[in-house]
Image (cartoon, rainbow, N blue to C red; front, side, top):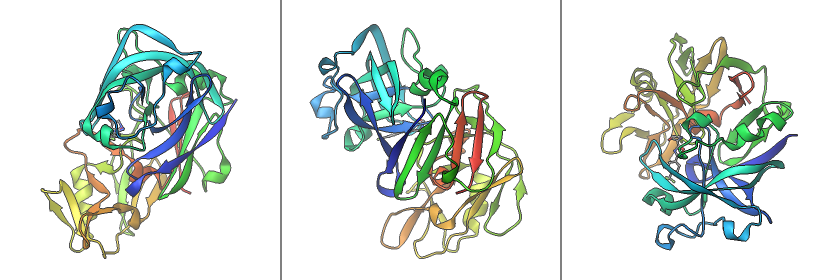
Length: 326
Ligand SMILES: O[C@H]1CN[C@@H](c2nc(-c3ccc(C(F)(F)F)cc3)no2)C1
């Protein structure tokens, strides 16, 4: 079978939320789909009231198909230091009409302050490889891994948009969502991520700089995080741009016209329009850049700033990533 679900951007395209049905009768919660992690966790009736800010909850006691996974716990920390932990149930989970009968659903008994403040999001749905799922003592599979063998094609596609509704499609490729040909490239999943090797980059209409490095496709990261050498070259082309240690990255005068950023995947060239690199206004006149250094992380992240300019195929059958402009 196959299905599609809409994904809606929060402010600044900081994150994208999609409706997920859990339990019997179905309870709908909006989750942040994250191709950079592998836990499906959600606010529940077990999440302390003082750690919530109006989030919609999943209540397993109201689901006739919920089963507690005795002795199972989970504990996760994200790239920005946010964290959550708790216990585990299995229940029926559906996304866009694709149903997994027994999906590990992780109930949050503790969430850190940033999650507490994120009122619109009821949790995360991991779409990375299950090898990095945090459930103990028995590691659990992701929704996609559980659904994959029943899908028409063993893949899902990501079509994020700048400040507009996009979609996650499961089991099929919708040709109306992209232009040109899809460029497939092998995935390095040795660290549990959808890792790949970009082949270079280009700022605006200048020449293409061939270079090969490791990066991951991560819908849960807002920005495009690249080696500082590339980031310095990009911002050196923007008059008034400067590295602001207080803000933790490059800022620039909001009224500046920004050059596009093009990345290579083998012979393919993915183009990110210049205005996608304006992440958010810090003051009336100073804006924070959407392309920043990944040096502190040790690997590059193609987050939403890049992904919202692309149509991306995550193929779990042959472990490849497909890239296309749109
Ligand atoms: O860990 C890596 C895996 N993918 C990246 C990711 N980061 C988050 C995240 C979401 C929401 C928040 C909060 F709401 F602000 F708390 C914080 C982090 N989700 O995926 C980084």
